Image 1 (spheres, chains in turn blue, brown):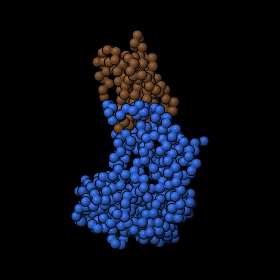
Image 2 (cartoon, chains in turn orange, yellow):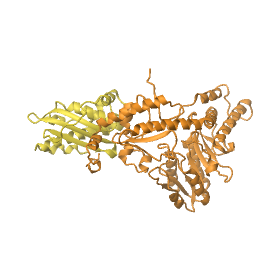
Image 3 (cartoon, each protein chain N blue to C red):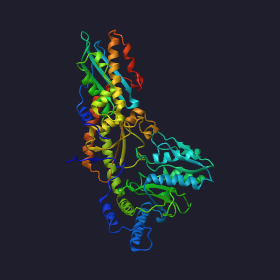
Image 4 (cartoon, one colour):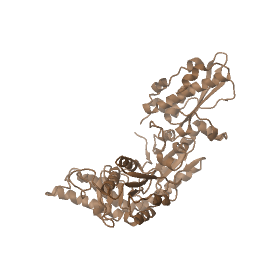
Length: 405
Length: 138
């Protein structure tokens, strides 16, 4: 039998809540309708189920259900929002502002648009991972059509000052889009309250199924439109063609409802467990928390265990604990996490980082076991580490002549 | 990506972890890689000056599982070899033995560099010509 796995990689994806699975099951066989079939009960039933899910999601965000556009996931939502705004508002301008710590779904989309004539400003972040509001405001030009800043970072959990960014965008009449993939369903996200006009998020980060996401598009003050990125049947108010993933959407809706009712309790419990994890690790020497610890998601911590390489460390406990590392030893480039590098971490600390992301199904017992195993792993790796030995001998590592290879 | 059994074994039970006194004339030390690149390997050999045979080898490595396994394997192979034999260890031998995937080949290259660098250090300390170690440069 397999070992008991401790899953602390909930920022990668969350397990689907069994209550969500139960809600979805009838929509595979008993209720197989296409929500766009207007002339028989199978279609009506599916459409009704989609409408209900749309309402559940709208309630979570406190928006109108007509403002929720279903997609295949957050990557598609990011693409639709940014490319869709760029095309729709081309006459107004071609300038987009985003930040260096955004997800690749945003950065690569911007990169793609640059080839099509967009000008993009990539804001730096401060050491704590937050953007500088003055820098944002200074970057706005008459041609700026969109500011795209993520709600919470996937690697560090750092939460950007959304309301302040919203005010700046409003003042300058610029659309504000946010990739809120890591925030929706975990903390209170209310786009209207903070002046976000487009909000991308996904089901599988909030205990729903994979393969379904959504884009909130403001219909009033301002009425925002995005150019569809796929041509077809004109579903989703013409913004996203394609047969709706009915079981997925039903599950997404159920996940949103559960989140609305339980996220506050979950967040309280998980932040206690997260703090326990951090406090225990900080009892060891040379352990650093990456990113702002005040403005941060409750269930995430990103920690560097100095003089230990992250992937190697993970291997000491990867028969038991699933986490992710900021070290990318598997990539040909050997470059560590660009998010951590943007925070100003040296490559050595970035290579030593591990992200622990807890979730609804994480127990205190698991955290206790994780603490013990990770500490043991760090000690094992430090016993093996020549730079730990040099550090202990008092060698100034910055003066060592390393042979780059 | 799953690790091979051999990598896992070397990682969990690394052979010859430790430190030799680098000030001794019979000890050669190779320190290769850089913390910024995510890999630092220190490999040391103790050589019998009479026979030029490697009597002991130790390592410490900062890096991923494959880097640790590559250096652990290298120390095993070094013991009992003459320095002339040792210098011929090729990174592809390590790749083959540990079944390293292409993305981890750099770990074996680092181990080869560390071996050559340790031998070079020993030779320099003992006034032995080191011309052939030019091949250690990648």
